[in-house]
Length: 254
Image (cartoon, rainbow, N blue to C red; front, side, top):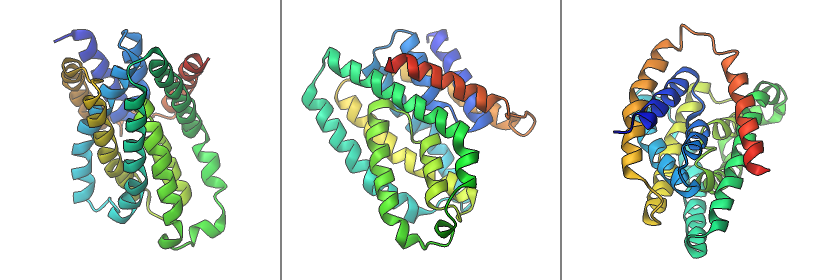
């Protein structure tokens, strides 16, 4: 067991448990900093995300926080988009250009995630009134398109299913209770990251020893962060996290 990766998993798990954001957006850049190739960092983080979020789905489902219609429409867009993206990656094959693509998409996803964290309060105040009264059936195309965009972005960067997915759902279905939006987003993230992760595994982009080390640290980290979340005020932590993600994203895109 490599202590550096265990500590990284512990730190990221703690932030996720404390704030609800920062999983892939922190873990993948950390793996790059450790010298892990971009393709391996993205692939390993996808399976890491699927395994860590699976337990959360069970909890949200028992509490009635998952709208499975919503999950189904998102997955109808994201899973095929992920499979198509994996097919294109397989066609490109191992190359320097492929790692460059992963780095670039990771940077884009980090910048978008930072914008979502910082801009969420403003966006929610300016949601058109007519959207609040729109029936679910009218929003199905928007959910499908959102899923498809997330499918491509997550498969190429391992980032986006959390902060970006939740913000998109808040904008599309503002009348739905927050607990159901968050629970549904987590439920959708599991099949998306699992499909994308398995696809990357088939392409040889998974470091299984690394995955075990990350889980060994992150699972207790998430437990600790979630138990302290009601005691610590994260009003300063989220903006600081967003600024850091934007800086890292800009460095990767440049």
